[in-house]
Amino acid sequence: MKESAWIAIWSMLFFAINADIKCKFEDDGGMMFHMCNATGSSDNILRRGLVSDKRKTFHIILMQCKIIRIEQEAFYRLPALAILDLGENKIESLPIGVFDRLPSLSRLNLSYNLLTELPDNIFNHNTELSVIDLEGNKLHTLKPGLFDSLWRLSQLDLSHNMFTGKEIVPQLFERKRDISILSLSGNDMAEANFLSIMNNLNYLYMDGCSLKVVPDLATAENMKQLRHLSLASNEITSIDDAMIFSKLKDVMKINLSKNQLEFIHKDVFKNLRYLEEIDLRYNKLTTLPVDMFQNIPKLYELKLSYNLLTDIPLNAFAGTELKRLSFDNNNITHLHENFLLKIEDAGLMLKIMHFGNNPWQCACLRELLREVKEMDVIYDTNTYDGKHPVCVTTKNFYCRRDAAAHDQFIRMYNENIR
Image (cartoon, rainbow, N blue to C red; front, top):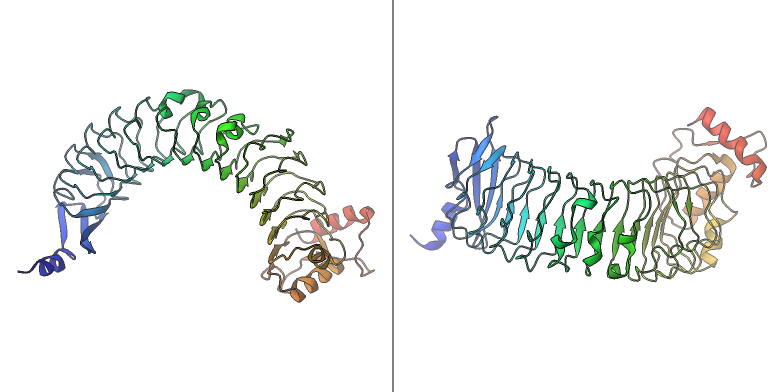
């Protein structure tokens, strides 16, 4: 029988070596792709014979297969295997040598298992490994040298484990300074100091890390390559240091959403010439200094939703390329007259603006809706569809822009709509 006929047969063959896991093998341009699923309710042990001993296997998916244990030879003789997905199982430990016979392995997913530790030399023979996902385990420490043999390691996800910053020693990354994507989210990083030796980070995620201030380690001199900094879901109340981000010359996105920010120094984003997106949603900001976002030349998107803002300054975005602006769910009752026209005259062309669920005066809202429609700006059409109340008014139907009336309209909105 010709080789092509054999491939056709293999491409749809099912195996049930373990009675509760079945794998479908498919040919993908000469390389084998294995998709496995749990078929029963019992837990499984992954043994040699289910996916092993197949020289053309390139990609194996064993997600959600109720695997509690992997035998040492489960991945025997898989020289072409590049991608191995073991996510969302119940694996508590890995036997020494389980990955030793996978010389081509480049991506490994062990996320959302029950791992409490990793053997010291578990990756010693996986020199091609570039992506490791350990998210959602029960790891609390990693020993120095664990990643030393991984010359190509560029992406590491340690998020949502049981690490604390003070327990991760710099020596762990002594020979891994070129990692470009690192996620530490969901761990307590309040006392972390190990990032000081990393020189090539492009993406750093520290969401939900129990931070009360912007950490110095995230904005130090060695972080000058950083493109994306995410500090969302922490406990930061203010940013008083105007220079805190000054070393991040090439940063393109800063995410400070879901903190408790009440104050941000007006110059904190100055001189960030490549900054494209700022996310400040879900904070407690009440005012914006008029020049906070001015002259950030690449600024494209600004997210201010779910704060306590009462105004959007008319000239706040001069010297930017702002196209997307969201300030829904604040305390804004009106904007400056001809808001969109005036910022267009200043050189801006907003494409998208979200302003729903503010305590609008009906007269002011009518003016704004007319503007966004005339200027083809995408807005909250589902909110403003005429089917439910969205604004308040007095008997005198005109847009009041005096501060004295502000509290009155907020009170009316809260009592009648919100």
